[in-house]
Length: 542
Image (cartoon, rainbow, N blue to C red; front, top):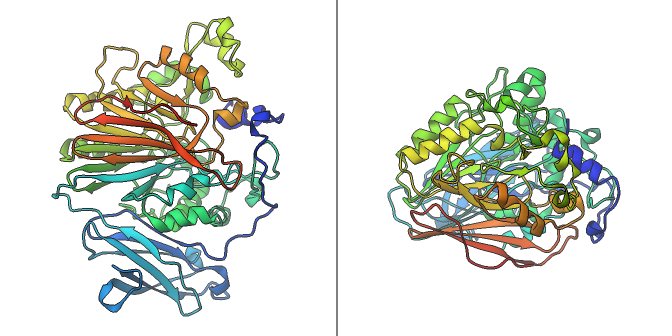
């Protein structure tokens, strides 16, 4: 099966000049950190989830229980009058010495500091977090940033160096927090090594080691320390392009192990905990209100989806199976929850957090003279003559009927200010959402902003070229709803909302091939209140 991963391996079989500047690499087998830091997440008006891990150096010898104390305060010095919550809980080797606590009884819209310690000698760094405002208050501004796809071996986390300096209310991770597959060797643009599980995590021990390895990066630890996070998973927390029901049949223990490790290492509070019996199930789709200004809906687009069709996911013509009206990504229960929650929402802005791209992204079979300019000769395959070639059927293009029904529901209900924030594809796209993408007269019902990866290879690394200008010439012919794309840079996306508009900024770094990089504003957009359109406000930088 041809996938983005297999194509990437083929393209990188020969070194390319574009990635020659990826010179700063680290030695093989980088040591795991002795301090995994702290994190907070799932902010509510009266509580947040706090996380840490007791490091190996201060763990009991044989996996025994250790008591972990914590404090939450309104001041960084934890003076007696500032303590808002404190307590003690236990962890052990059965939880890999991770600790999660839901601290309730906090004040809304309030910054807090927190810390952990043990009698065995662990003293955590001091974390920062913030509760959400009450749903019935009227904030005049809220801001957040979102990121995705942080392959440890394919780039340094220079994006996080700059994100850590922001002043935002919370952050979102849209998935691919780890990659189940590793890489050994520093050729072809790879900058760090990951040899866990002989190249592939398949059991609980290996998945745990993945999170530990990724947390050896100080910049990742710092952004987890600085902000409360809303964390989603995508596919690589388990396996490339997986579908929940399919993997539950084929590899139920692997699914359970991957889910267990994710829940141990991420500051999330599932609506329903991991089921004790197979098939493994945990409810992670959930919503967060930030006053009446913003409501966020975190989706789970892996656990309930039907499997891939059309032989492969990447650069392929459509097939009859795509038109199956029962085909689903969300599953019946999650789809019903999302529709009823959107309908009931009183927020000015309704933001869907989507792991995968919702806008249609197809590339028409171009005339030979134009297609010859493309490095991906697959676009001229004979089987695609007189058809559109879909770029990624692992995204919503692989579930067109459910997408159309969801967007038509938004139209029928007269819902306004619906924005989708997306990761997964490693490059930037922005545009409008229509129930029928093949009909230019179909009314726009929302907008979508797709943020590029933190470090995972994008099209520039895959091909050795910056194809942005070529993409801007070709893509709009088949996808007129796409107003902007960038196929080169790695970014975090900053979103600022007010009652009158949403401002979206792609903040890009110059390189992820070296451990230090400057950053710049790649593109700024404005979405006016009540209007499903994307307004470009500045020229691309870089």
